[in-house]
Length: 131
Image (cartoon, rainbow, N blue to C red; front, side):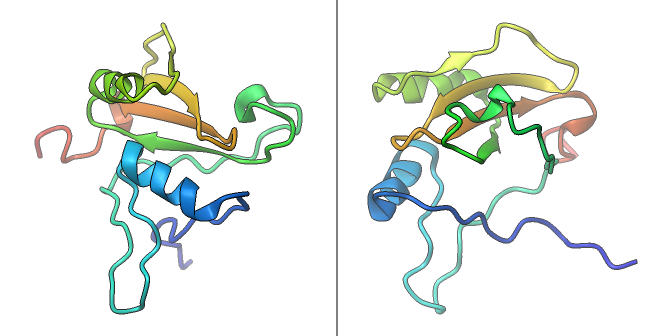
């Protein structure tokens, strides 16, 4: 059976697409879409990705107006949280350390849910394990 290699894009509606692209670039390091086909798209590091359908009443998405949330892998959750808070962005750190890592939650300027994840255990990539 053929399998996909990974996620090639995430597309969503926004009231201010250019402003939101700048916010993701400035605060999370996600490059905006390239201006031409001669430029490369943002490259993510290899690692675990969870692809999960969730119940319509899941609190994972924040407001019921939002139908998606994204989880970004990070190498150093504490440093990322400090960076965001220093920029005046509220971040809630989950006090529990789970077998698969540590988490923090925030919202982008349009209220979309963002989860930050520092993987551990079986979900740590070979690169993070030092291999």
